[in-house]
Length: 318
Image 1 (cartoon, rainbow, N blue to C red):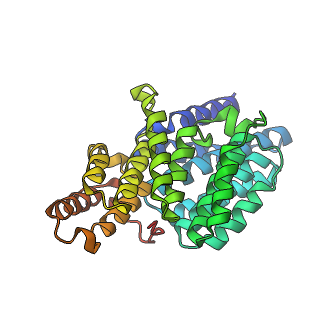
Image 2: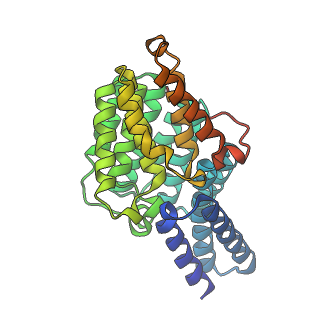
């Protein structure tokens, strides 16, 4: 019964991830990991241990994701490695793929895109993966190649991400879903960032618009602020690539309304790229650029992610 309750709690948290305060997600995920690890110490029954390892791996994966959102890259890496290890012990392909995909994501955010490519290829080699898992991995692969400046490989990966339609599913990415899932809006948002790395403003704007349109079609209480904020900032960045300061300001207005606890690391790093772009000679004489830059600095300084004191710089996505 304890294992059943643990499984239910993990599913609930994964599905409520984007509608729950990041600090609360951190607290709950940490509790679930502690419970799962405690259960593993208390049983030697093989079937129960298999379930315990799976629960511990899923909890560690959720905790890793929220540590990244809260600005702690080293903790996120450590926890993804823990999730990967638990998945290896029970030979659970989807969990290993998710964890290695997360490690690939964290590698390019840590400035190691070649390692990210290697990790995502390892993730793609695990068995039992459905379309959602393969879509997520192709998106991560595309971004990793984008950081390397390999335009052809990056665009191939983006296309693969959009073409996964075999109808296959797996128990983690599809049946549990939530934070383990990868819906179309998140695909579009992530691809917008990849296009920005390739300096493709048109592709980035189209993908960001698509993400925001898909998010806007959802009920308001089901729109993930972390995803919508990142898509809005990428839309602003795409417009700045074309020198459209007014359009960038318009795109950022919804972001400035986001409460401090929802200002995740992904949004802050994208805003740092916007701040850098505003220093371009194109905007040297624009008072609006100076004002917008100051708003970004104030917004970022108040963010919970920065208050937690991450000391390792994240990748500069510019």
